[in-house]
Image 1 (spheres, rainbow, N blue to C red):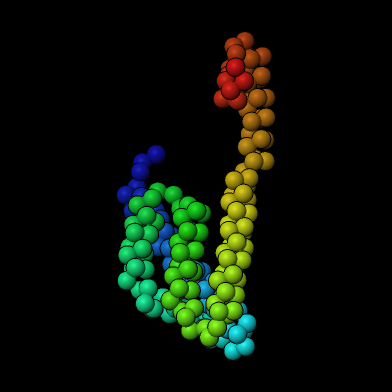
Image 2 (tube, rainbow, N blue to C red; image 1 turned 180 degrees about the vertical axis):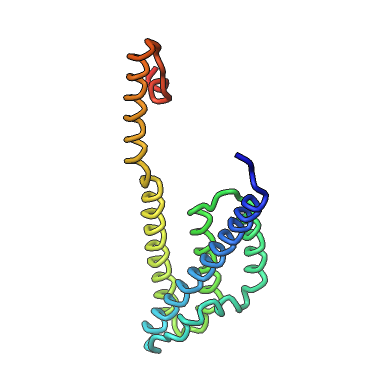
Length: 180
């Protein structure tokens, strides 16, 4: 089998696009979480819910926290591109930091301390829900092939017993080495 340069190049570009999309999705999720938390805070103040804020949530990045956020985003994009695997933890950390930066920049617009406290508290609840969802997705990815791997191990054990009967030699698989 010959390695095709086009396939290697296309898979590399595809991986880079995937990493960039995951990066942008984490930023968008963090901004949307902050927008929902700010809307809950404004509802607690009696100002009503601003659904337009949720629609334009990435604009929450434009605040007094823009310069520190750009520094953090530069480090995060370096991490996302340089790291060979896309980590659930890195994605969650980026979304969480973006939520906190958006809240820090715009919570001052809420009129009273109750709204600010409700906004920060609801953001913690929303981030906890996001973390739980990420944990369930990670567990699903880890257990996705468990049944197929068990079937493969049993088929390998049957094949080894057939080879032993046919040739009289003992073939040992990886799972037998672990028992010693």
